[in-house]
Length: 126
Image (cartoon, rainbow, N blue to C red):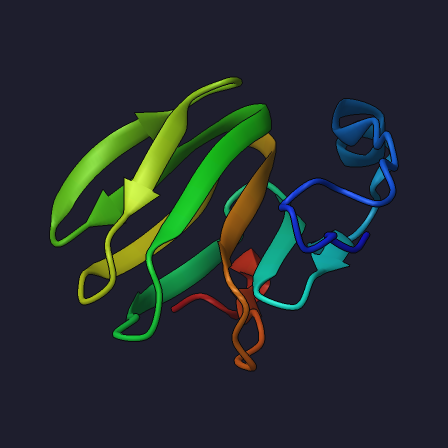
């Protein structure tokens, strides 16, 4: 999807995030939008999968939960995640996300960057 000089989209592509999230059968990014300045990913974690604690000094991230329940740990404080919960993850914070009680899917939106997503499977946890 591109953007015209006036800030209006030159194409609108409806995406049913809930159906994509429910139909996903593997962890990781199920859908991605790469704009010139903006990036969005629909991420799915299976039960007990997690994004390991890490510090992001590059971008603020907006997370919108689409499916399931999970926990966001942000600078050591645990927050519950559920459908339609929105979380702002400021740059410079240490964050981790874990799926609980089944799969978790969320939309992650931020300024475009090159770093990839690292999902740790529960079978690898020690």
